Image (cartoon, rainbow, N blue to C red; front, side):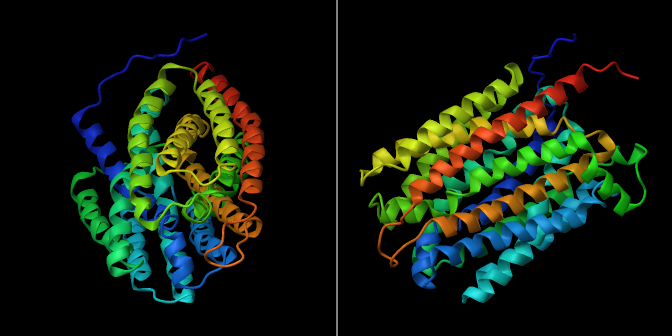
Length: 415
């Protein structure tokens, strides 16, 4: 049996540039999606939305992103990945501008759908680029850095967005994201080299048959199901986080930037550490530890009474550790499932199912959580937490199967 190479090979200057480009790209896409949660209470009060309506606003992006990913999957391995990235990132920018111009609930839904159609595919393209340029023994480290876009969005993006929203209205953060994304698009155009290695490998020439193959392969389906469950559990609580903190834990709007900044700083610290650890220690073991940690912290958090800000900060840090302890090793393992000629299609379908599952989760969360009026506490948020814990347990079994498949694939003799 071949031993796992745990040597930390230094990245080349170009590899560091690619990691930076993908990280800042993810920063804008994640911020565009994540900012809805901290703006949730403000938007629900401003537009007189019920929790179920806000859940639809969140899910409209996710479901449209999932549909777009499925449509793009058949073509994902037929073009230079740089060109595909630029195309969808440009559409994402246009959709984000529309969000910044929306002033009614119907216009907001339409803008979120447009943004999702383009933005939802970008993550899968980034994953395909990572898989093409880095071997599996070092992808945990790469993903740890790229996924720092999540932490960066909380440290810088969300506090700045909340400040802008308090001064100029909840639409202003989307315009800020669009301006930043234009700069990043120019960086991609000028600095990123073509990513075409996958084009030299023989693969199905018909886009529809390529999509059907990527959907029907048995080993791929296990990966899709694992990703769908992870997203289903991960998205249920998030859209209502700020409303829960304000209406149940009695924080104020002014305290939210500090809360998200502290959670973001913890993410920036934890992500690279988990990424490096998942390249040195068994990835599935890291996932088990993160899942157990998350279940314990969630069960405690959903039963908190009104508490000071510092207590909520501690719980958010602990939850973020559990989330990262699941996300990074699960993502790194999943990249090891597809063969090179199917990577783009697999990542697109995988991302689509993740987005669709997240959209379904937001809608289901809005159906579980209720609120008597816009200033009263959220009800049944604890039920939502227990559902998330149950889904997390089921996801453990599916990722175990993914882990077995990837390890068996690595130990197969080379042709």
